[in-house]
Image (cartoon, rainbow, N blue to C red; front, side, top):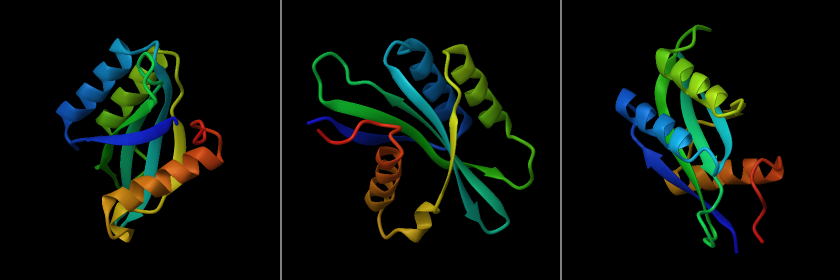
Length: 130
């Protein structure tokens, strides 16, 4: 059974660089990239994510995410978001923008990730459970 699992990276610059490096070094496995936006007090919280096809015969489809680490107060994109978008473009991807509930609205981060997985599956952005 193919399952998607979130692997949470941190929220800082170094974590964005790690996500970008994963995208570049695993370009052949890269399935899709995402920018998730959530409304917060005083602006938006941006999450960046990359989904990869399973390695070899694995049934594990990793989704690496930098969760809500980028605060956006106006329409100006942050340097981290621009870096992510540029890297995605370099590997032939255009990040898909999705508006979500903020993770603080969920009792546990696992529920938040189940919520995102459901949205991605319903919109055929990741494969369904098989």
